[in-house]
Length: 334
Image 1 (spheres, one colour):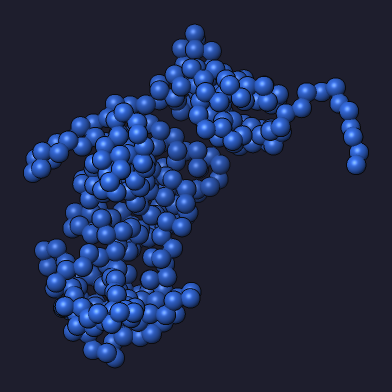
Image 2 (image 1 turned 120 degrees about the horizontal axis):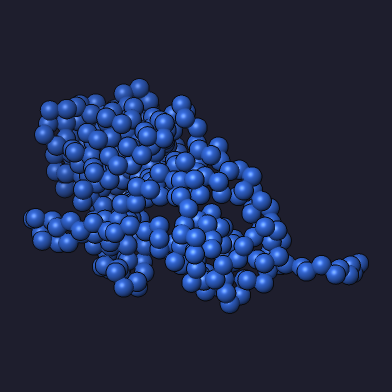
């Protein structure tokens, strides 16, 4: 064992030096200040410095803004070029970037929904991904969308379908990188005005020259108006279909020879397809990819007749094999 004596101050978070240096070298700090503009002269810290302090908390194991004053100021003061602010300054800077929520009343149920649509920060999000080279104009990407329940006891949280208070933001991702985030209260189900949320997401992507080739999402998007928006903004889509009596009857009517056994990972299943499935108004035909797995309890289904657990994917992709479509869909949101 060798002991080295040093007169220099030592920080336990020396690795943050490299993160902070990269934050400036890749152009993120400059982009943030250009996009968000200057703060008032009396503020003392730019927006890039505010966000650098926020990164400092997260990347050094902190949980909240107060950790900056209580535990992390000393170590972060040793980071070259780092200007450490107080917790109050950090929170004020973040609050300046917020925008008012919009209240929407469902005329059928009378439920009041709150959406928080921060176009400025969503635009910055995409510009940041382009600046860092994580997204490139002209490349065709796959887009995932989901509404994620976030349990919280904050004052404005609302009851979610999971029986907890929280939020349920809509999040669009490319390669597990968030490219659009829209705040929703917990009482706003994923189906409510989803087509408008997706239209805004596709609009931001288009404004930043990001091309979407394929789109995949869960059954909350199994709506005619959502399918129309998606179909207008990408080449192909893959949406988990909601089961119905008519769907189950058609699946049950498929001849046994229509089913092909495939193995995906460790799971063996049967797959088939209905190439003329007409949901919603019945005018437009889509492809329905169906997979089934034998039930262990041998309980038969009332409509389809077989003792299977089955699922279906609605798609306009007419070329890819059922096995490949299921494998692609199963990677959603990894």
